Length: 229
Image 1: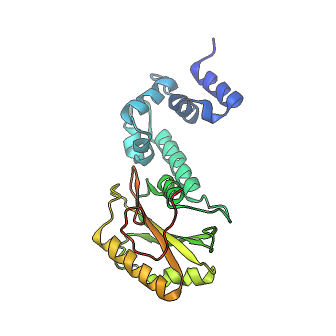
Image 2: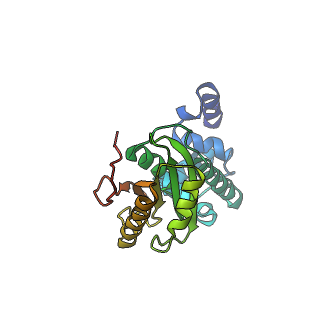
Image 3: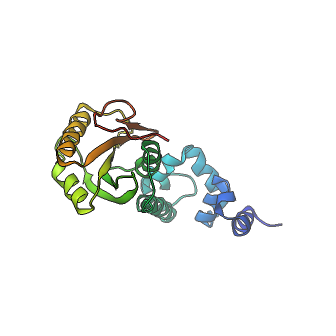
């Protein structure tokens, strides 16, 4: 009789990883259990300890190693897999020429930035038809938007010959509610953009579970509205 580990691997081979349940995916990743705990039970222990996958992906190796059946080596393997997934997602670039909306940008960036432990400020530079020219990381670290300088933002706007742009940044606290500094900074950038003829269409703030579009919430005053489609 085939064991559950072999069944999970065969299912992956036949139908792809997307067809597997979370427990089966963990079984394949772990590869083996211990003398006392079979790999399927180890996978179940992980899911019991981390009922939300976000918790698993953010756990430190020491926390993972505390789960029954997970030693230091497997904890490192899991941490590496989770980090690789984050980097793959963060490295995903917008397709050149894609027309964007606040909703599309918000959904994409929420998936990319929600689990980042550092704050990131990203500029999405567009042409006159709201088609993507370039996505640019403007800042990463401990960001207070009130001290981020518009100079860098417009440097890239001019470099890419952008007609307009969208700003996106995340709140590692998980709360997407814009701060007073966020609003002041956004208005400052918007005013600079009006002087330069390069319009700030939206500033989107990403939390752990959702995002807030300042444009959609009428918290950003710019000449033209970005359509939500």
